[in-house]
Length: 261
Image (tube, rainbow, N blue to C red; front, side, top):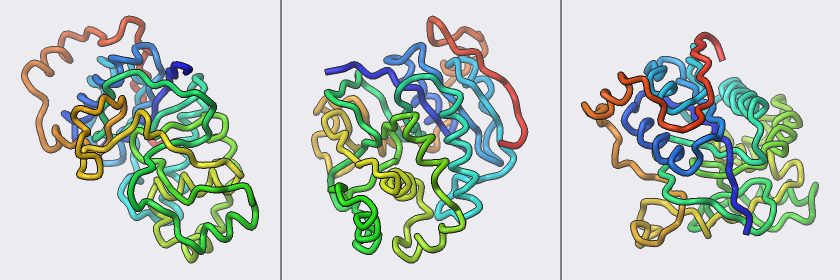
């Protein structure tokens, strides 16, 4: 089993405590990975948090993170993710969200293109799968992921993003009405390139009834972990941020830039 040390992309908004705790958990196991942190349009200024956790940080002017997205929002959302991936260097990149908890190392036996949850009814529509399998007959899975905690082969992500033609976005909406949701969309563009979606269930779970043992099963990636939603940064958190001491031994210098992204 190969130990993976992914870089990460995180589009945050207005949940600073949850953002702080997600980054803290990721840094515990990936102290030197690149983290591309973007505050979505109208979101909090996360410069202090970015500095503490050694993130490359940008503050966007336009909001693109509220689904369901229009074609233009989805285009800008994908551009941000692909742009961040192009600036990273690791073989893999993880999509972080403020309800992701990392609590262990990540190991895989073989290379993946896109991998995430594989439990429950998260399936692409039969119409979309019929279309995709006409193009790539080897595709087997109709599951979709691409949500928080999912892993992407970084170069495959860049290839899939460059190949998708947004003039066809509304056509794909006729095949799959949920195409404006990031997880469905990301899975779709990988499948369009012939990349199979695979399971990350050996290290992934959700803090929901779908995984009743999620607190004790030892899986390294937890999604839907909303313990810190709506909370403010604690006095201890603020003290750490004000001390301006990095949380990782070799932090990636934050850019501190702002403006359109």
